[in-house]
Length: 163
Image 1 (cartoon, helix red, strand yellow):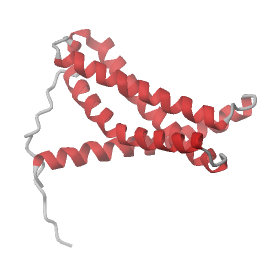
Image 2 (cartoon, rainbow, N blue to C red):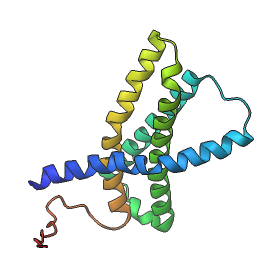
Image 3 (tube, rainbow, N blue to C red):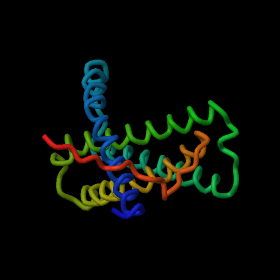
C-alpha cells in the first residue's frame, strides 16, 4: 500500500473509531445525567448546539495548526501545552460521540421541515470535518510531543504465520 494512502486510511479510521469507542461512555454519562437533570431542551436546538460546538473545536484545531505552520513554538509550552492539546483532542471526540448519540436518539422524532433538513446537512458536514480535524490534531500533537510525523516512516513488516 502506498504510504500516502496508508496515512489517509489511518487518519480516517482513527477519526471515526475514537468517537465510536467513546459512545458507551456518553451513554453512561447521559443515563447518570438524566437521573439528576430537569427537562431537556428542544431536540433541534440541542442538536444544533452540539454541531456548533464541534465546529468550534474543528476551527480551534485549524487555528492551532496554522499557528504551528507560522512558527509558533507550541512544543515550548511544555507539559501544559501537551495536556491542553490532548484535552482538546479528547473533548472534540467526545463532542462528536455526543452528536452521534443524540442524533440517533432524537432526529427521527423531529417533524419534517427545512430546519430538520438543514440539521441533517450539518451532521454530514460534521462527519466530513472529523478526519480533517483529526489530521490537524495529529500534526499538532506530534509537534507538541517533540516528534515530527514523517510520512515516509517505515511500516512494520508483515509476518506470515502458518497454522
